[in-house]
Image (cartoon, rainbow, N blue to C red; front, side):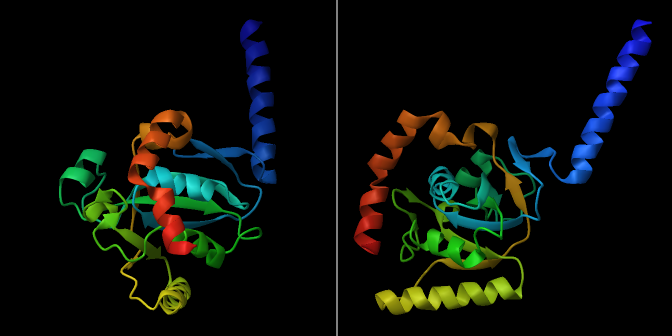
Length: 209
């Protein structure tokens, strides 16, 4: 009798979830973060130095569903943080942005990216120096590549200086270790101390204001 009861309950739960999935309202995960599939979302990939800081910069933008820290641009499969930082794997600290194109477009995300990096530093970003901290914009198709080129030219005209931010064809994104995800929220005081020591906000104000 008990087996029959649990079988009925399981069947009901299964049917409810199937209905939610077909309706596009069931939650699915990206890394350890939940996103909704109520609409056709898109993804963008940016490297702007420390991925903790880049997550914070984009999470506050209306239309951004979630940001995920990871690695991109290198050849080593499934790299670890130690690989990327201490070995020459070619990867840079990157964030994957999952967004609703009905609320925010790619041009807006690019604008947010520029205003949260130093586009004239070829050695890294702020206090983080080295290949893995270079600023990079990853394009996924020719349309994005054209948008990025136009945006880059606008920045160069604004400052009268050459932008050294790299533009790479997107190939693969590897999700970083769990402790890196939402670091600015989960380790708030440590994060503030790090960002203050790097003078990130001061440098950004000096460049963009």
